[in-house]
Image (cartoon, rainbow, N blue to C red; front, side, top):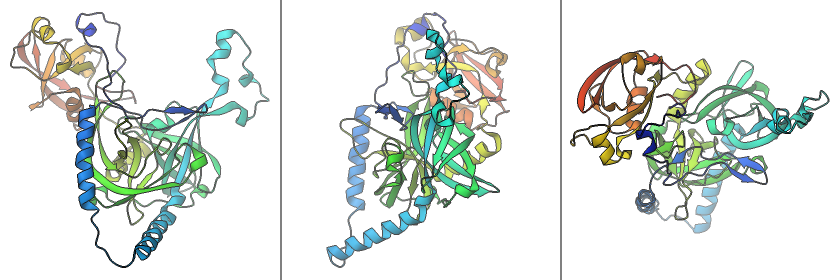
Length: 426
């Protein structure tokens, strides 16, 4: 969704953004940010606690073990097994450093000082400073380049990117492509620095209760190759997220839930199974006073689909629609009746707040205050649902949108177009 315009209509003033819960954002420790969950998560505290109670019950049931041998023998076997798994994959996990260009600092221009960054004597080490750190996984070597998958929020806003390999080598990286909706990005480095290449496993074959190992750089590269161990706590978790930070969920992430500790800096790191195969990319965790052990990773089968597009196009190509919108449930009932003139039986839908000029929506004749209730014949209850339906449609298809306009149902045909940027499309 593009930035809100300054339209002062009465409807646009009736709702105020409010985040009702949160995934941890980039924290600042000693002046350096550690990349963690980029999304604002809008699940309520009650919903979080309900998920926690259910998963604890599943974990207790799933971890019931068959006693065999002595406690010492079991401990040795577990340690040996986990160590072997880690040795197999840890060389593919790298630290990703997001660098800021100090020569671009606006403070120098603001106060009229000469920018020392413009001096030719400045070394590369002096020109860049660490803005944040995260993790990444080497997943492919092709020709003279090695490819790394990480989170979009790890490299977002970068002036330059540096990779620190498992051997401690510092290597400049190139950004191949990024996608904010899936929170994935692809980087490349010279192939000679790829000491190990991770092998993908099938996240669709996972079962709740099976082991999971997270590898990454919590709190930055000083703690590179940190290993945490747990289980798969849940599958196909639909985590609502707020991409534009307006207090309302505008996307939903499908994620693997794990209790293997995922901390700031682990973002972009590996979640692997007992065979040492990459089953997910660590992305975020729920951080509240009453919740521990709820980390989330992007499933490997979805990762593979997205990184293939990023390698080919530098972005994920999705349909462009061209509206600013909000959930009908956020509009007070009196405004629904008096301003939108909705009949009482219309309880769910998406309100068009503004229509962007020269887009499929404007060309089709959609208008502000239209309330979308169906997309290609299927009911639409929220902006999240509308985007999911839209993005599963061919980028150049013609779709049918049913709206209420001035209290009457209207059917509109919309010829979609391919999105041409990495801005939040709608």
